[in-house]
Length: 368
Image (cartoon, rainbow, N blue to C red):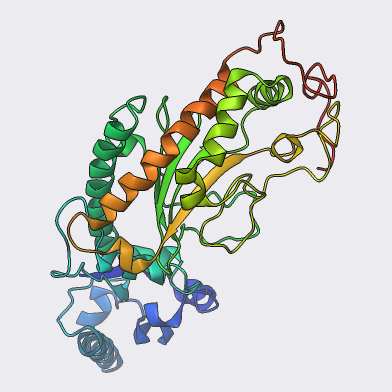
């Protein structure tokens, strides 16, 4: 069905003609002046020859407008006085959808439109809301199956419903130069405490253009957690040694490569993401053996998928996700230990440089 809007008097119509909305969403009738007011009944009875003629012209104009709208949208539209058509609602495709737990090409096609600034617009989105709702339904079913898989791989993840782990598609544009209202992908996050919390996360995003990704790690943890993690590394605690063992394991390096700062644009982005200090944190020797880790403000790994992998039939995509999540789980558990377990001040193994801790609580990191 079409979407209509109310049309005000002539002064209002002049203002709306300068609107920046796409021309394709407007009816041709929007450029016509508003109809004249209906003549009073007393004048109609007076027998004046000019009044019936004016009344006939108004009726003729309305019939022409309705005919134009019928030609443009292929059906007769019953408009109330003061309403005009601004666009026709696009219904979701009736074919091409897949069983629960899979992602269809229809979903990728809808998200691909949001990369176009002309489509990443509230009015365009409103006209295509039935398509979005069907896409959202498919993604929720996929996340429900993904949650079942992830809770089998990592028993510390609670089996929450999709609505508690899925992120909104609406962007927060209050402090952004990019004012497009919608994200270009669908995503969800999982941790011990759900979608939010102090713990390390798993994150999955479906995004067309071979940009779908599964990631895991700690993104910009709070200062207390980051300080505790650095203290473990400085004191070479058992948890820190476990981290080194995980990062050097064959399974980890096969999927994510050796640990190094995040290089933008690579298919398998690895340790550190883009959040890395330019110099050593205060109180840390720049020649420390773990300086590359100590300079990181985020510790994360991610693995990208092609569109062909995402829409693969059956359980192929979910099976690949399971294999990657299985490698990520020890890394996530180790980060949780590094951020939450207190550092043993009586540890026999101090750092080689004789440091007694990480950055001071009252001081900020250098290189910001």
